[in-house]
Image 1 (tube, rainbow, N blue to C red):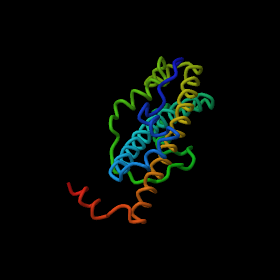
Image 2: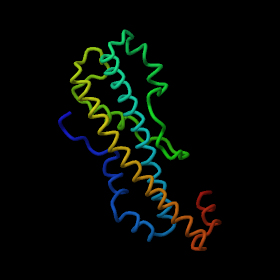
Image 3: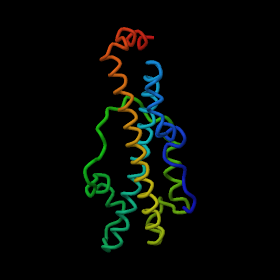
Length: 185
């Protein structure tokens, strides 16, 4: 866990989050803006999926630390229904977007999340020292915070691109019939 992992989403998300990306994107032809919007949507879905994986691990690690601190006699397996029900988690902070695509490469996102706790086998939590669990919890929490920030940035890009598309239709710069013809191909 000493090595900094690649930021969530890697270079594809870095490109979307570049400060000049949106300004340059809205200058492009309509078909390009739609394509960029779909690409941003895919990256947002990828980040959301990764975030869910990460949060699940973080919830389990935190609950194991709590179980130990409280000297709870129940096993972690006994506590899984409670953990999975998100009893202790606050309200969701997502924007409730309807996702029309699936994560592009789930195994890559799982590998990314697993690399956050390299050297700490989360499949054997009961055997880990408190210090290892605490280190894993810190790494997961820091990654979740960074990932969430990047995800919000991608959502802002999606909104900016959607606004530009709407503006073009509203001002007659784009033709709905042409969109439908493109979608029919």
